[in-house]
Length: 208
Image (tube, rainbow, N blue to C red; front, side):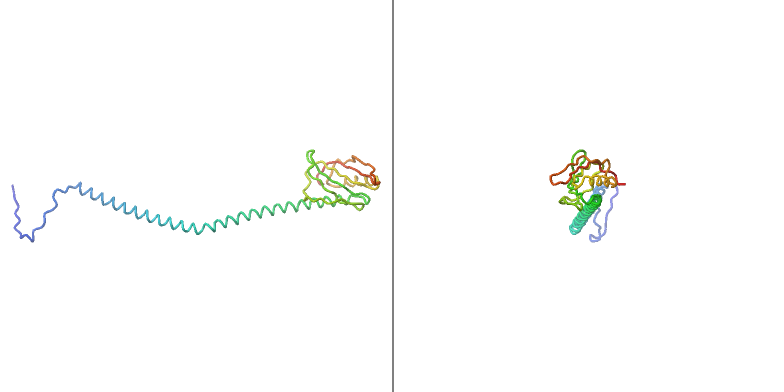
């Protein structure tokens, strides 16, 4: 057995190395340091992300009123576009009825006037118009907004004339208008005031 004797003074003697420390302990300590470092990095990332999220929330809160205003403007625009389309249809329908009634009025003889023009769909009256008066008389105007006549529906024209031949002239004039087909005189009777009331029925034709 060999012995080592240190003859150096006490102040020059190095302290002995740690005894009993194995490599497993060193490895565990290294793993612990790595874990602590990873946890510190995780905490830093977590708090950084949280701060960024709060920043984004603040920015979103400032942008939200603008987004709501854009949505409101879009809804208003859609409403205006719908109203414009509705007005276009109304104007077109008014023009349709205006031309129809003007042509009907031009077909009247001077001693003949209309009291009623009605259009029915599938056997049910949907629209009735007080017709324009001729030079011999007149009727009250309709308060309902004009609507384009439905297609291929029954038409009833009622009126009065001072002479029976004028009724035939009016019926003949109607044949030359593009609005009617299959017209016939259904009634013609002498009224108490001496005029001749008549009723003409037919179908609304396709404009030629």
